[in-house]
Each structure stands twice: as structure tokens, then as C-alpha cells.
Image 1 (cartoon, rainbow over the protein chains, first blue to last red):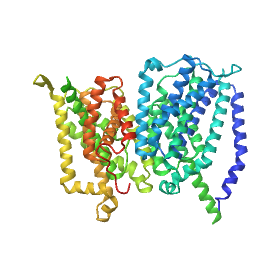
Image 2 (cartoon, rainbow over the protein chains, first blue to last red):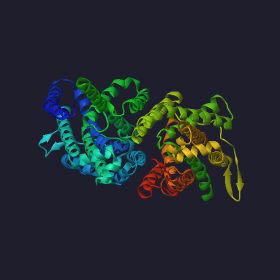
Image 3 (spheres, rainbow over the protein chains, first blue to last red):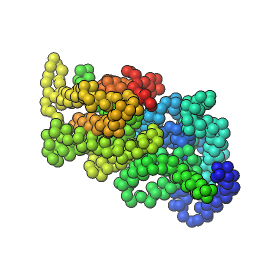
Length: 324
Length: 290
């Protein structure tokens, strides 16, 4: 009974959501704390990463433990191109995305294999990339990293110098990405993804190219991770290997899992929530991984569909209660 | 020179083999990929350090001790974190993520208990060595190879010659059919985790004296998995051979290509095998329902 009404109800909510988000953006721009703006800037990049990981995770059904590596590839490519070769931001940004997706071509064929293989291969890949970031001194600067990354500007006209200007840029980039992901997964490709997720054998028997769809999800997800890396490099002005480690990949995976597999709003909320929790648990750094690990295990046992799924189940239960 | 590289690589390869057997055993018995398997090795190394240097156990007794302790922990791990998911949905993705959660918990617990500094074993497993035909044979390396060989032999005999082993193999080959003929499948999966945990812990206790013990060495699990894939995932003999090959590739590769990228060799080999020959050298043994 609830089923047919839900889509239209959510459509009615859309203008309100957009309006609400714009209002929050405006408040953030007008309020005085620079710390809050900076925090939100980093949070937006995290949200972007969680949303692109969701494409691989929730739609291709593959556990990627290399998302931080592709984030890093984007960051390094963008930094090297703009610092050493003087590329403008508008060229370095797409180059970062393309580089990440080109490298992901190496791993994409593994997307066709079973989950075990892909998960472990991406873990190994993440370890390899991290080693290269740290050890390939001539190119990446090793542990010292790369500094003096210029702030982005659009044809020299619109310099993004301040944290507030960056906030607008990041929010716009995230909005574009969000619309892209939504379009992608509501079209034919999205239908393919959903049918593969629900029953791979049945999907294959209907002529859906299972392997190719999964590979596409992996490549596109990595493309957006590369873009996020470029934005991070220019926001920070400095990059070093630390943020691109295996543990950050795991943290991103946790965000997607908490939010709910297959839900973009879930991934966005999960990553924002976890960024806040991360900030809140700053004092207890030593206990943080244990808490997160326990959270993962408990979620996988009791709420594998994440908060988004739990919310829908709650709605469904209430609807049924009302109907009966 | 060549012989001594070969020998020390054989010792490290045997250690990889022990971890790889655990991966393949668990995969065949339950279809699970357990990311926290490397942490069992890490705990074996650290617990072994505590037993040897704090409780002054003799080395072999410490090794037996860590095998029991970590084996039991491995059973508990399965009970708490995997069994509920297996009975509810049996989704491989959920179990993989859950095992990553366990990895985080175990890794950080080790930091809290043992600190972040690498710990040196107070003594070598065995001192000195023999010179034979111009080649130096360090006793420690020979002991590691010997202990690992004995462990693998005992495991092989238990797996193939006893009622217990027959039960484990039956469940690995066909869980549904095993259930029909009255085998307690959950019990058998538990035993599998016990054995896998014990072998991984032994690997840790063998590895640490030649390097060091630290919360970081759990990453060796990736190499153990690479060995399992190389030999053919789920194939026990393949796991042993895969570990030994990986040890040689790593040692000769880091000698002749680059020692800075030593770990990268094993990881690259893993990805290459998966890309080119995912069934490994000896072929994959899959569960009939997987």
C-alpha cells in the first residue's frame, strides 16, 4: 500500500531538501567561524568520496579497499601537474579524474570476479600505491610530500582564495556529482545495477552484461574519487601520503556501510555523521578504531542495510501497521 | 649466495604457507574470506613474545601456547562475528566487511596491550649454524623450516587420515549433503577456524624471531592470501606450494630488482595472478554450493 505513494512523496520533498541545503550553505557563508567553514570543506570532500564509493559498493556489489588510493592518485596527479608543469586548475581537475579512472582500468576486470578476489586485490593495490606515494621521491616528494599547490582559479577571473569561496566550489562540485550519480543509477545502467544486485544469475539470463556493468561502476567510481583528490590537493595546498592509506579506505567503507548499501543519501549522511563522530572522538584516538570495528561488526549482524535501510524498514512497518 | 637466499626464502615461504592453508581451509569449509586472518599471525607473534620474554617459557612451549590461545580466539571470532551473518543472509560482502571490522578491533587492541614499538625476541630459536660445502646453514632457518614442515605434515595426516579430518573434508566439499548424513556443520566450521587460527599463530611465532613482533605485521595476511591464490584458492596442497613460491619470488625479486619495493612484489603478484589466472597453479577447489 505504501509502495506506490512513496516515490511521489519523495518527489514532493525534493524542493524542500534543495532549499534546506541552500539555506544551510548561506548560513555557513555568513556565520563568522572560519574553523566551521574549513571543517565543512573537508567534510564535503569526504561526502563526495563516500558517494562515489557507494557506486562501487552498493551498485556493483564489490568491496573496494582502494578508494583512498584513487583519491590519492587524483590528488598527486593534480598537484604535480599544477606545481611542476603549471597546468591551470580547470585542466588539472579533469586530468586527475581521468588518471584515476585510467589506473582503475587495471583493476576493473577484477570487478567481474567474486567479491573475495576484488576485495583482496584492491587491498593489495592500495598498499602498492601507498608505498609508491611514500617511496617514489623524485615524483611524489616522498614523506615530505608536495607543497605550494596553487589555489584554483577560473581563467584567472574567479580566484578561489578563501575558505568560503572554496565552500561554494565544493558544494557546486558535489551537487553536480550527486545529480550525475542519481541520473546514472536511475537510467538503464542503474536498472542493470539493481537487477545484478538482487540476483546476478537472473540478470545475466535476461541478457544484462553483468561483468561490463560492474566494470563501468568501478571505473566511474574511481573517476569521481580522482576529482575529489584534485579538489583536496588544491584546498589543502599541500599533500603527503598519510591521508591515502588503507585505514582511510576502511573509514570510507564504514561510512557507506553505516549509511546503507545502495543509497546515495545514506552514503552522504553516513559520511557526515562519521566525520562529526571522528571529530568528537579526537581525544580518544586510541579507542577510536576499536569502536569503529565493533560498530562495523554489529551493523553487519543486526542492520546490514545500514541506517537508510533501517529507516525504510521502519517506514514500511509503520505503513503496514496503519493499513492493517 | 644463491643457496643462502634460497634457504632463508624457503623459511619465509613456509611461514606464508601456514597462513595460506588457513585461508584455503576457511574458504572451503565456509565460503568465507577472513580479512582478520593476518591479525591471528600478528597475535601469535606478540603473545609468543610475552610468553618467551615475560613468562620465560621455552620457545617451543610458547609456540604451543600461542597456537592454543589464538586457535580458541579464532573460534570465538567465528561464533561472534561470522556465524550470525552466515545464518541470516550468508552474504559474502557482509562477512568481508565484518571481518574488516574485526581486523580494526584486533589491530588496535594489540597497540593498547603491547604498544606501537617493534618488540625483539630475547633470543634466537637456535644459535649458530653449520658450514657444508662452502655454504653456511644457520640453525634458526633450518629450525623454522623443520617446525613448519612438521606442522604441515601433522595437519596433512589429521586432515586425510582421521575421522575428524574426514568430517572437515566432507563439510568443505558439500555442506548440505554433510548435514543430511548427520554431520554438525557449525561444529565442523568451528574446528576449521580453530585449526586455521592455530596455524596462523604458529606462523607468527616463527616469523617474529627473524624479524620482530609488532601490531603492524598483520599485513602479512595479504601475502598469505596471495600464496593461497597462487596455489589455487581452496586447494590445501596448492596453498603450501604457493607460499613457498611466493617466498622465493619475493627474496630473489628484492635481491635482483629492488629491495625498497620488496612488499610491492608480493602484492603485484597477487593482482597479476587474479587478472591472468584466478584459479591459480593447481586449480581452485570450490564448495559445490558456492
